[in-house]
Image (cartoon, rainbow, N blue to C red):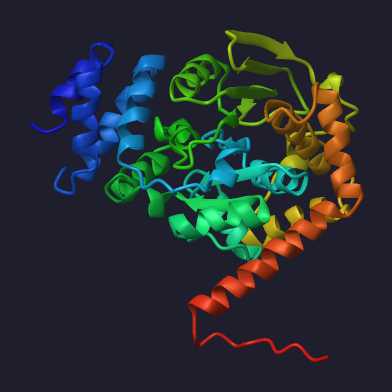
Length: 365
């Protein structure tokens, strides 16, 4: 029977209990369960609509199976931030949250970026970082060193969540069917570094509150979950085109829900086409152009919007507009480009240490 009883339970419109979520996770990570049945379960859960309790229960179960990096006292004493658009909006935008993560790290914030290769887009965070020369397969102890030395480390989901190996085929099958799954917005909740502050973008406003509730219950001190309007669709980032639904919380406070118009920022006119990306090579070009200051149009603006939110939720600035100006200054001063070069050089050194056959660069004086 495997997942069939749970699928039938969902078909009746009934929510899953914690015990049923535990059973579901055990079956999803079991190699012998057919991929089609896993995909049917995930699709039916999405059709019913995931509750905050279900999202939290899945988050706890999968976090418990993750490999956690042991953070040094120096790193633990700092605010650890993650910025992630969950995917699933199918709007084919460029890698906004990845660009924001690099920019925020250049601003001096400790960023533990959790991500994967593309599932519902042309280029995932791992794909573009790899193309930029930044390591995506750091071991847990190496990730800790990168956070301490560079304010940035990429935590490649398959390396830290071995259980995902047997879930990935079902996710890909759902994607080919045009069906989003709970894993589209679980990813940011499963960061093995367990960030203290997070900015999460989700592909529909109805997901903002349940994801924010789960994020807080999982231990984040501060968080912001956003879904941005783009014509008749929603962007899993702050949108420069339409109204943004935002749910945020701060340590010791409840949840604040608001709708924020993009006119709050000094934006240029923008269409969805202005924000779209491409394959890893094109994505690399876009990220480099933004962080070097060459790109001055809507792509820069959407990065500044989201970087402003990330700096605000990290406690670096008192208001979003202050975050916009702070992020712009990091780019215009050359610090963002310098951080990109620093990470690429560190990545080159990392590859040479780990591949004895790699060509060595000899410095001449």
